[in-house]
Length: 566
Ligand code: SRM
Ligand code: SF4
Image 1 (cartoon, rainbow, N blue to C red):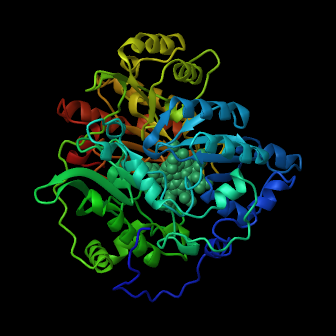
Image 2: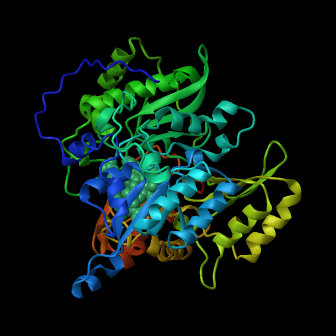
C-alpha cells in the first residue's frame, strides 16, 4: 500500500457547498450504489446517481443525439445508449486481446472500435443489457473498463517506443506498473459486472488513502514520454514523466505537475495550462511522490465546482512554488531539482514501416479520428486488423494520436501484413496528406452529451479544405498539425495544436493557432465563431504570410508565434 502523510501547510477557508456528486460518491459504498439493481431492471436508462458512479466503471450514459428531435416530436423517450471506455495501459494489446475487442464491437456495440487520444478503446451504442457481457468478455482477456473514467487516475499513457523497448524492462512496464499502483482497490466492479452480486453490502474494503470514500475531486492523468519525443503531450498532463539520467541519482524521470487543457465557456475562470517541471525522481521514488501529489490534490481540489476541480487549478491558485513546498512537507524531505527538459522533442507520428533494434519490424497505421471500422466501398481497416491478429502473433500499440502500431513483426510476416493492408485499401503512410497524417478529432456528435458542434464526422472535410488552401499556396508539402473538438473540453488537445478548431456555438468554431508538435506552447485564439466552411478561408492570410515570410524549415506554429498574429 502506498502511503502519503495527510498533513498540510495550507489551510482552506472555503465554505462553499460541495457538489451533489461528492455526496453520491460518499454514499455509494465504494462505487457500488444502486448499479447492480438498476442493471437488472427492464428500463433502458439508469438513474442520475448511477450515471455518476458508472463513470468509475468506465461506462457513460449517452443518447443518440441524431434522433433526439425526431423522437421528441413523436413524444418518444431518448434513444439511450452507453459508451464504454476500456483502459489499455500504454496502449499495448496482444492479438488475443484485439480479437476480443473486435468481437465485442459486433456483439454489443455499433460495429466500430474507437481508439482514443489516451491510448484507450471506446465502444459506442451499447445497450444496458450489453454492459455485463462486455465486462465479462474484457475480464476474460485481462482487460477492464474500471477506472477508465471517473475521479481517479485514468489510463496511463506511454510512448509506444518505450513500451516496445526491449533494452529496459522498467520503461517497457512503466504504464502497467503505474496503473496497478494507482488503481482503486474496491471490488465493486468485479462484484457488479463480472462475478455477480455476492458482496453488495460489504463495507470493510480498504481503499487507497489518496482516494478514500469520495475519491479524487476530479479525473487525474499521467503520461510517460519518450526521452526524445513528445507523442503523448506530456506537458498537458496532471503528472508527466520524462525518462532522464541524473548525475548522482542515476536513471529515473523528470516529473512535471499541473497540466490540463479543458476549459468551459460558462466559467471564464477556467483555462488550459502546461505542466511545470517539479523534480527528478528515481524509479524507487515515483509512487511515493505521485501519492503525495494525489493527497495534496485530494485535500485542496475544489469539490464545490466540478468545472474548476482539476489539479491544475490547485497548482495555479496555490502557486507552483508553494505547491512544490506542500509536496515536500508531505514527504518530509526536500525534492531534487528537475533536470533540463529535452530540446529535440518533436512528436513522432509512429506511422509507416520501421525496423526495430532486435531485427523485427513495425508498421504504424493511420486511423482517421481513431475510428476502426469497415467503410462501405472504402477502407476496411477493422477486417484488416482482425486478419493480421488471426494470422500473426504481433503486438498492437494504440498511440496518443489515435493510431495503431503493429509491432514485433517477424521478417517473414512483413510481406503478408503489407498485402493484408493493401488488399483492404488501408493507405500506406506515404500516401497520406500532410494535414491528414496527424489530424485529430474528438467523437463529438452524435454520442457526446457535451458536444456543441460536429468534430470527428467533419474532420475529413476540414482536412481537405485546409490541404487545399495549403496546396494553392505552394505550401502543399508542408506538414500542419490540425486538431478539432466539438467543445472547449479539448479532448483532442487542440489547445496545444498548431491549428486548433474548437466548437463554439451550434454552427461555429473558435480558431486557435500557434501550438506545435513539441507540445510545449499553448495556442492563441485567432478568430471567434467562424462557420465551418470559412475555417480554411480565415486561416488564409496567415498561410499567405507563412509562405512569403516563413523559413523553409519553420513550422506554422513556430512561424505565427515568431511573427505574432492579428
Ligand atoms: Fe475527454 C469529457 C472523450 C481525452 C478533456 N471526453 C469527455 C466525454 C466523456 C464527454 C462527457 O463527459 O460526457 C467524451 C466522450 C464522448 C464520446 O461520445 O465518446 C470524451 N476524451 C474523450 C476521448 C475519447 C477523445 C478522443 O477523441 O479520443 C478521449 C478519451 C481519453 C481516454 O482514453 O481516457 C478524451 N479529454 C481527453 C483529453 C486529452 C488527454 O487527456 O490527453 C482532454 C484534455 C486534457 C485534460 O484532461 O485537461 C479531455 N474530456 C475532457 C473534459 C474537460 C475536463 C476539464 O478539465 O474540465 C471533459 C468534461 C468532463 O470531464 O466533464 C471530457
Ligand atoms: Fe465531447 Fe467536447 Fe470532448 Fe469533443 S471535446 S468529446 S465534444 S467533451
